[in-house]
Image 1 (cartoon, rainbow, N blue to C red):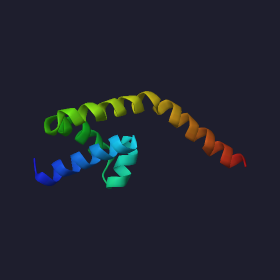
Image 2 (tube, rainbow, N blue to C red):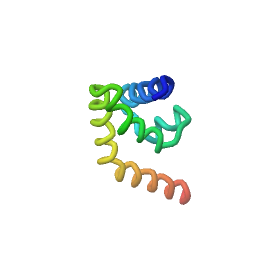
Image 3 (tube, helix red, strand yellow):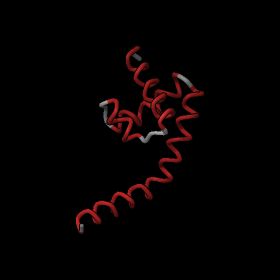
Image 4 (cartoon, rainbow, N blue to C red):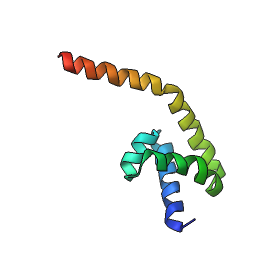
Length: 84
């Protein structure tokens, strides 16, 4: 792996841990696709830094469990704006 990819992986991982961020929000901040962030966190990070991967995995697993709640809330807000 090129050094700059490893740096990006570690920077994104640190951001996710520090901000309790979602894949989507990290992708926006680092101007990469959600697929890139997901691949970086699930495939590259375990090879680069196993302990950081474990921390990120806890956050990503929790986000995956909660995403239906966030999605439902966004939909509710969208339609309440349309009515008002």
